[in-house]
Amino acid sequence: MDALNDPVARALHQGAGFARQYQRVALVFQGGGALGAYQAGVYNALSEAGCEPNWVSGVSIGAINAAIVGGNEPENRLPRLRQFWEMVSGRKIWAFTPDGDLFRTLRNHTSAWMTIMMGQPGFFEPRFPGPWMELAGSAGATSYYDSSELQRTLASVVDFDILNSQETRVTVGAVNVRSGNFIYFDNVKERLGPSHIMASGALPPALPAVKIEGEHYWDGGIVSNTPLQYLLEQEDNLSTLVFQVDLFSARGSLPRDMRDVLGRHKDIMYSSRTRQNTDQFRRIHALRHRLAQALAKIPPEQRSAEEKAMLEDLSDMAVVNIVHLIYQQKSYEGHAKDYEFSGTSVREHWEAGYNDTRRTLRHHDWLALPTTNDGVVVHDLHRDDDA
Image (spheres, rainbow, N blue to C red):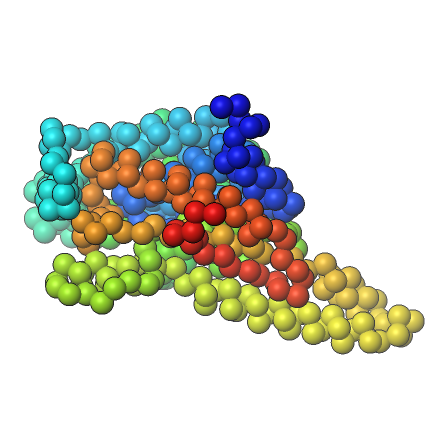
């Protein structure tokens, strides 16, 4: 069917048209290991609809996906994302998996166990004899795996000259090991390289800290698993559409066994604090709005130069529209879902992100500009609504 006559294609491109009302279109990627293929699927659908971001930010695996998107020309982004995810999920688990949740659970457990024992191709490999047998202060004494393989992988899927051209803004979050402070590496402020991306994903004690300019950094997810706050703190007054792509859901069922407890604990620990961030942004926005109203009551001829400048600034307050997509765990996935890299699961995660985003874009009324009174609006994906 011709794309122009396909109602779904028309709806998707309409949604992308609404996105172009915004001065900034941002992708915000949470950390979550193997679940990060869901984010690749989200970008896949956005790209097909002609909705390309001009800012990508991420933590951990989200930082890797962000670097691949921001570090390639638009036509090469999907091929490089596929290259990365096919590489890290390339190990064969079983030749055939029978239908049924029981067999998928066994397959996933086997895959996760193989990751623990063998590492993951193109990503990390286990240290031998292991950190407990190493001398304190030695290179292998502070992590179970060596991630130097990831540096070679990043060099093959990311063009760091393109990434640092600032055509697309790229920010990744990490934690300073000594100070405990969260830091954002931003290509607008400094030149980013493989080490900055690796630092954002250096989750201890599995992976070693990454040294950058004399300081050591760990995975940003230790402090904040979603870099939304950094975007909301920008003072450039640009209308912004954010696709926030989370891999752990804050909402979930009451655990019924220890496997459920471990999985639910991880979900809560790494889920984003979107409401906390947006509530704070709304409070600040409301205060700025009231200040603008108060200044407007002063007769123009009585306003000082500072008050005139402030009123002009406050009259042009940015609006932020957040479209929130959250990966929904399958019944056969356990607490090891973030380090279960089987090709079957990675393809499922990618497809889920792709389909969820297509449904979201068909609700193009969600993408309309909020009013300045709103400040920030958050939309959640309704998975059971196929309208």
